[in-house]
Image (cartoon, rainbow, N blue to C red):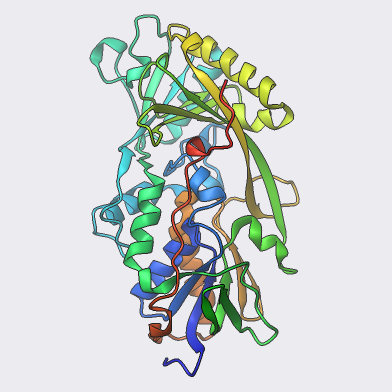
Length: 398
């Protein structure tokens, strides 16, 4: 489809440059669609860059003692993502990397914690492997201490370095990723005007528009959305006991604590804490949340020097399709309003499933693949990748 004047025609315009939009863009273009992604801020800003990067395989969702719809939806995701990272998948992620090839689930000596982890391991035998004792060297570094008392399982769930994934996806599709000054607004006829202070406006005419803007989808009348907040915790300092990528099983289907390990821009080790601590933490202010984190860590890993660790917190809201119960949706969501689709992946790892469902919707709309001529966008500004939360200058550490 050739441009006419300042008008660009595409099969699909994608609004939002998080993992959902970027994965969808890569898949559609691989299948011959003329697609364009429009981002008004930074790639991954909002939910994606705040994710812990876990490619779930179902273990977390089996903690209730049964195979849930969520567990079924994510079962094949670790294999699919690994194929893409090695260049063997439809979406080429070569150049991105893993922080860890797998993560762990550990149970404390509490009977309830042990039972939750044990029954999950029985349900997911092919994806959970019990790890030998501390002396075997197979435990994650942070748990290799004589004082550790518990049970550890290795999970077939890799941890991705999110910024590298976003960067690779954007670079491979660079000509089809643009930054718009201000939110993208669709006219009644579906046209989208791209604006930038240093460029003349351009009009994009898509056969279909996909809104994959996370919480930004709330501006759409057809978006039945819910927000589930988290109060995440960051920890840094010489007292951290080493690398750890793990869930700690508690007394419910929500892990008591989920820990991933990262490095900030200065090279310092960062622990990123989610799970039950973050979910319950929405009822606590910053100081209370830090005290809760210190108590939890001192209880679970008492041998570490927590007095030599400082903490920070921030909140993030998970945008999802609204559920009558307010619970997490079982999988990705796609809503259609005429030739507009409003989508949420629900979890980062489910972006590939979301892309397939969008493709099915395009077929229903009779949108056929036609390469788009994007030469008018050759010198248009491109969005940068968002900053990790632990590198934000507005964080208060204590």
